[in-house]
Image (cartoon, rainbow, N blue to C red):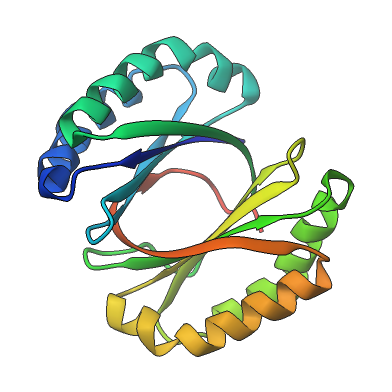
Amino acid sequence: MFARSTTIQAHPSFIDEGMKHVRDVVMPALADVEGSLGMSLLVDRDSGRCIATSSWRDEESLRASEGPVRKLRDEAAEIFHGTAEVSRWDIAAMHRDHNSDRGAFCRVTWVKTEPVHTDRVVDVWKLAGLPKMEELEGFCSASLLLDHAAGRSVSSLTFDSREAMERNMERVDEIRSETVREANAEVLETGEFELAIAHLHVPEMA
């Protein structure tokens, strides 16, 4: 399965309006596109950074949706009063302990390695990282998206609340450092986000 993420650098005062637009307009429109498996929206209210990710049954569906999604993306960027940047990913892993509820928060990590080492990143994440993530108090779910050609990956770790995320911050940093070192990779960036919309209907893939 595949995913397309749109990062919008929104004006913070328009985030609520943008979130409403995504719920009321973008989500219903995506549901009508062949091969769509739902979407999620991460929001950082302090910086204005918002990441909308749509999931797709296969690469053919992802490619075929480019036209209608481009129009939705441009409209959403206008509502958010921001600019949009697009990335496309393979969904390498998806694991849920339970579905998230209102108030869930995510710790997101972007990683880079040599393209020839991307399979190792996946193996280390699944075999060494994920079992430790599952032990964290308030753990909800975790996912790993991969761009093989660029050697880039992004891991999202979801907690039941901001408080649970913050309580586990030190241990999450330890797990990230251990996993990245073993995978011979480099951390590009980390971020903390409110999980504003959680409707990615991707089956268990871990």
